Image (cartoon, rainbow, N blue to C red; front, side):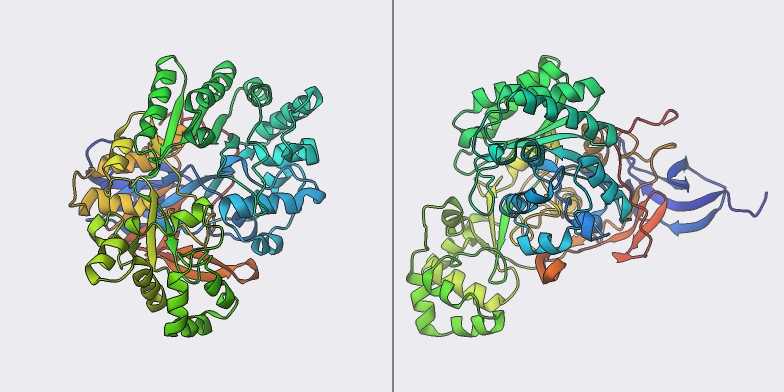
Length: 581
């Protein structure tokens, strides 16, 4: 036999979890270029080999709900997602993004992204290069920068509507015939350029930093239908729709509208779903409507997060229970160390803990003082804490007010995240609802929101949480077996958005692979970093146990350390299943 290497990279003797949901098996995986060449017992040598004995070998994970639209322009590493085994992300969700955009509308789109996705305006002002006007030009700008992992993108409705209608887009005006024709033409252009689909928001909760409703809130059936019909004309494209169904008061009417748009255009539709704490069983109504649509021949998926959707609260983050109290507002401009020193003053503590927040009727202000569902952050962070460990319950046992305990924990933690407040998927104080959603046939994983909510949420770490907590550590109820978890993270997510060339360990499929030390896999506590443009702040969360993450056949991370290679590329449009896969 020749000594010349036959393969570029061979992973030897790993426990292969191939993404199909089948039982794991021990074997080798050989890669040539950006494709998987062979799986099984492989005699041929590789130019490079990795000893995977005792480790899991999985497909790279596909995160279909992110907001890396800005970060992909100013940064090559799509962290935190790429630190958690994710090898492909889909951005442009919820109808917000930065293209198409005329120069005069840049600030408007920045304000919208700042309000909806909690990305500081100063970060976007400094970080965005704006070498585009059209959506195809934006994709070219993304493609021009190498990345650690692959990206796909939706055409965002808010940007499209503002581009076509200008000021009329945000004042509730109905799009006229000329507007519809232009939107349709631009949608066809976007699909030709490689958009994976079209996203929109119909959420009352989505507002710009100046308080304006998202421009797409009241877009009518004619407008949505014209855009969807343009996608039909191109023979491709997914509709991603974020809706809160008019604060869950018009579920049937809202779903009927978006269902008819998707049905008439023959488009696949995907939409977020979560258990709201104000209506803990309402998600079942939405899921039953999705079931009915699929029974009628449609293709609809719900995207769910496999843990409580929650805010991280701290003195150096976007929010905490006292962030809107007058006495805290007076010292907030101080540097963090000086602010904490002032907060140790008993008189200031007394004032702040007794004050009501400014604008107490704002929903978020009510949320961040919901002490019965708020928990201290520990390391590792407990994502399924018992209710008797809440701030309210602990304070009652201590004989002090919840405000006093929360205050003391914030001061003790200093600049880091101190408190965890799940506001969805945790109404009953456990993750049983998240488990039920996970197992539903019409639900796929999503809502990690990587690249957004920099100062309040860090849910992009959910792949590691699934593999470590759900598949190994959970003691409060049922666990999920590893093959099912891997299939959900890879193949199911990939197929849901038409990326059928990835998500499996099989010949012909894209060589996106993880080697994971499952026994060592763990999540570290969230950290605050000031590494965005203009010194902007973001929450990040690291993981231990990823031996290697491979993208397009190249090792991009070894034991969480970047190797320096950046093989990630823009994925343009639907990707077919390999002919011989």
